[in-house]
Length: 257
Ligand SMILES: [Mg+2]
Image (tube, rainbow, N blue to C red; front, side, top):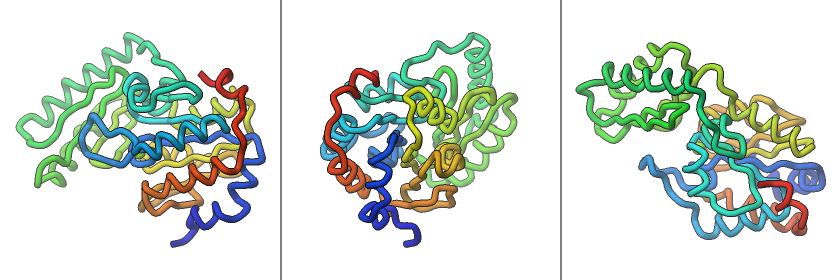
């Protein structure tokens, strides 16, 4: 495999990063937790949860997800790391959604219902400030996917972020995951982010590029990231390597809430 991050991580790459002012950023689904199609998602393997806690005692850690902040907080509990929900909109806290956006998203939901009426195997997850249209539950999912994409293109003021058997519909005025990572680097006065992701939305982070972002794409697919991990299971090895490269730092927990 080209640009195998595990091979790089055994060399000086991770050690050099760990010696600097480093932010660790992770997508949740498909990176920290195995990817499942159930919309309520899946918890981390116990070993991953334990390693993440250890790593968060040593580095500033951000979990940057398309999930709503409250949902993400349920899946990634505990102090000492930053949670970012709704693709970058909820930076470290649940954010009240402006009324104008609530009305816009409610309008999208109604329009999607009308356009996809009668089609099987899809449902809308209404996240207040964004919509996620899930599909792929039936045998004819490719046909449903085309209909979902056409419906998304018909929505006004929307940015479409295709994921794995999901179409995320986001107000065009909202920040991206890339914006969120840049803000966190500024807020905590850090120089570089090591970011692991597996979604289209993570490409907004990867495109920032080095020296600001060292990107690691988890799994297959076209990517702007320089590095790749073969599968989600390999993330534990990266966490373990990061763990041994630094001693715990007491001041971190106070800084990151
Ligand atoms: Mg993901």
